[in-house]
Length: 131
Image: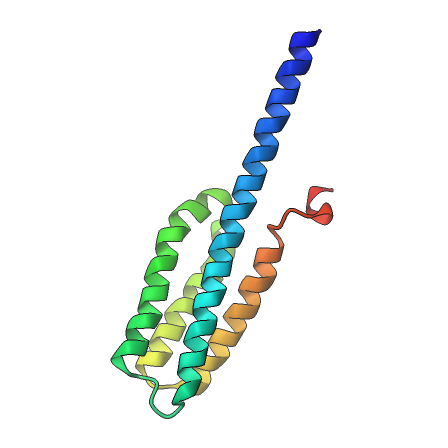
């Protein structure tokens, strides 16, 4: 009887630890993306007339490339279709910056930041998510 309880407690501890690590990684990844996008947004608003500088274009593509690295792990943890919108948004932002289209780039940035913030909330360890 004691062995069964030890096994059950061990399995529960492993499951809880895994859930905490998963949630932590996902939230850190989304926080990184949100912070990167907000930083890009600030830089874009400094000169709204000329956003197609090499520095901003490289930054937009760099954010997208670094997200791909994190995405390899994230795709093992969450549905692929949910992150597809993020991928599309990042690609659009890079193209809008390259085309010097501030209005579209800013709108896409704002939408993507909001989407990531709400999406990240779905993976926080909270009473609603546990129940």
